[in-house]
Amino acid sequence: MPYRWSGSVPEVRLLLWPHRSLPPAGFVTFIAITAALLSLPLLAALGSPVLWGLLPFIGATLWALWVALGRSWRAGEIVERLDLSPERITLTRLARGTAPREWQANPWWVRPRLHPTGGPVADYLTLAGGPREVELGAFLTPAERRALHAELSARLDTLRAAAGPGATVD
Image (cartoon, rainbow, N blue to C red; front, side):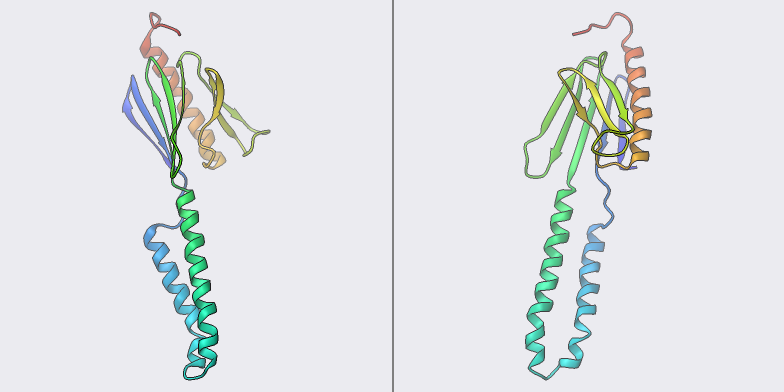
């Protein structure tokens, strides 16, 4: 799953990231294979003026493919970090080229909510509590969001139990 828990009660951290179906080595391999396959028809045009007419189009195709895949790769450079402690829950969303966005709330009032329908994605996962409700892991698959909801609920219950009845509430 594209998320990982670290730490132990009472300080726990969850990192979430989108799927990467094409690793960097696969990116280069894909471009190389595409270039080789686009070059095959050029063998018939070797030594003729037609070759020079086809080369710009093949070069433009490879360049457009490179740019599109690079843009897709950069768009997926998102990390969500959820820090759980007895005093505060902090959700930070880090995306390339933007300032970090942060949400904080008291762990006693935060509830993970799974919306099977009605959200922008199936099994929409949110954290409700504090001044607003925020989404968590919108880039995960529905099955991963359901599993994360169960894990997060259990972790919050454990955190509240570890804090004990004498814990303060904001």
